[in-house]
Amino acid sequence: MEEEFPLFYGESGKPVQATLSSLKMLDVGKWPMFSLCSEEELQLIRQACVFGSAGNEVLYTTVNDEIFVLGTNCCGCLGLGDVQSTIEPRRLDSLSGKKIACLSYGSGPHIVLATAEGEVFTWGHNAYSQLGNGTTNHGLVPCHISTNLSNKQVIEVACGSYHSLVLTSDGEVFAWGYNNSGQVGSGSTANQPIPRRVTGCLQNKVVVNIACGQMCSMVVVDTGEVYVWGYNGNGQLGLGSGGNQPTPCRIAALQGIRVQRVACGYAHTLVLTDEGQVYAWGANSYGQLGTGNKSNQSYPTPVVVEKDSSCCGQPGPRPTPDFPCGARCARIVEIAACHSAHTSAAKTQGGNVYMWGQCRGQSVILPHLTHFSCTDDVFACFATPAVTWRLLSVEPDDHLTVAESLKREFDNPDTADLKFLVDGKYIYAHKVLLKIRCEHFRSSLEDNEDDIVEMSEFSYPVYRAFLEYLYTDSISLSPEEAVGLLDLATFYRENRLKKLCQQTIKQGICEENAIALLSAAVKYDAQDLEEFCFRFCINHLTVVTQTSGFAEMDHDLLKNFISKASRVGAFKN
Image (tube, rainbow, N blue to C red; front, side, top):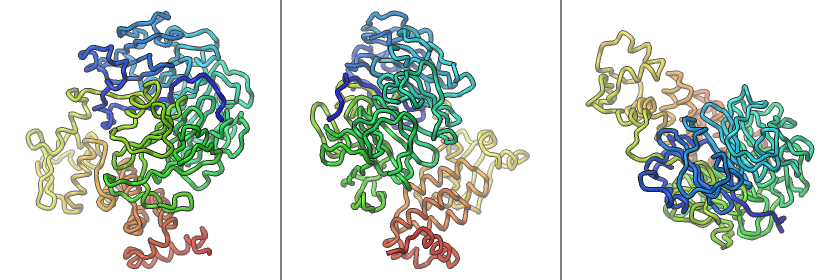
C-alpha cells in the first residue's frame, strides 16, 4: 500500500512556447475556475495554470504580458501581498511585463516560475524552505531567487510537494526545500534553504529534462539515461529496491534504452523513449501504471498502448520480450502525469489521447482511448480536482505573432519578389527573408537582381519544403522525402534543418524502409541517425533481412552492417 500523505495536486512545469499549435485551440472553459472570468477576459488569455488542493487557484497571462490571479489564496500563493481570497481576477503587478517561460507548483502550494530571460521567482507556502530564499516564512509576493543562480539561465522548473528543482541552459540541476527523504539530492536529509547544485553522478552530465514526484526527483540526461533520488517507498525510483536514495542514482534497468522525457505522478513514474515506447513503475493501487493490474512495480515495466483503427498508420516500437506486440503498439509522442495525482495520460503520433489510473473515482488499469485532442483535457475532466499538469498556452486564433504572419506569406505570389522554378512549377518567396534566414541565400542573392531562379539540383517537393522551413522553422514530409531534404540540408550546411530531417526519419522508420534510411544516414554523415537506424535494424533483424531493401543493399554497406551487427552479438543463438 502507498504511504498516506495529504492529497494535494500539482506537476512539474515544462517550458511551453506560443508556437505549440496543438494548444492554440485549447478551451480553458474545461476548468471550472475559468467560469469566473468574463468572455472578454478569456479572449485575452495567452497562458494559464490551475492549481491548489481543490483546483481553486488560477494564474494566467494576457496578450499584453500582464499576469492575473484569482482563487482562495492559500498561504499567499497568488502572490498579491496578502492572504485574502478573490473571486475576481487581480493583476499581479510585481511580475507584469515578465514573459513566463515555465511554471510549476507544490502542495502548500508554492510557486516556482522562470521567465524568458531565465530568472527565477518563487512565492507561497514556505514551511520547508521550498521557496529557496533562505527562510521558512511564507512568501506573499514573488521573490527573485538569485543565490547560486545569478549567472545561470533557468529553462525548466519542477516542484514536488515541498521541494523545488530547476534546470539551467548548460544542463545543470539545482534543488532546494524539504529533504526528509533525500529528494534534494544533497546526500543528507536536512532541509535545503537555498538553491544547491545537484552533483554526485550528475557532476559531468548534461541534463535535458527534470520532474518531481511528491517526495522524489528525476532527471533525463542527453545520453538518454535516467537518474533518480528521494523517496522510494512504493518503488517510484525504479531501482528494484524500496530504500530511499539521498543522491542521484542511474536506473540500471533502462540500460540500452534512450529516454526522452520523464513524468511523475503522486508515487509513480512514466518515461518516454526515443522509439515512442512508455515504461512505468512505482505505486499502482489505482492502475496508474497501465499494466492491467494493481501491483506496485519497482522496476521499469512496459505500458502497451495498442493501435486502433483511427491510428496514423506509422510503425510502432520494435517487438521485444517486454513489448511482444511490436508493431501493434502505437508510437507515443507525449506523456503526462501530475505529481500528487494517480492519473496518467499519453498522446500517440496519430493524435489519439489515452488515460489510465484514477479517473474521477474509477480505477482504469489499462490505457483507455478518449475523445480528447490533448492530454491537458484528461486532467481538466478526470483529475480530482481539476488542475493543469503543465503551463498551458492558449492564444486566440485572431492574434497573429510575427512568426505566424511570416508563415502565411510563404508561397504567396501577391507579396513575393522572387520565384523559384523547380520541375516546371513556381515557388514564391521574399528575398529579404531568405537572406536573413539562410547563409547560402545571403551570398547568392547579394548582387542578383533576377526575379526568377531556376533550380534543377533538387525535386519540387524537397525544395519547396526547404523554403517553407525558412518561413516556419518546421518540416512536414514523409521519411523518404526527408532523405532528399537531408541531402539539401547537408549541401547548404543547414545544421538545424539536418536535425529536423533526422527526427522525421526516426519517427517514420519501419522494417521496409530501415535499410534505405540507414544508407542515407551513412551517405550524409548523419551519425546519430545512422546509430538509430542501425539499432532499429538489429532490433527487427529477422524482418529487415527479408525485405527487398536488404536484398538490394550496397555491397560495402552490407559488409559494414554485418561486421557491426556481429560485434554487438546480433547473430548469437
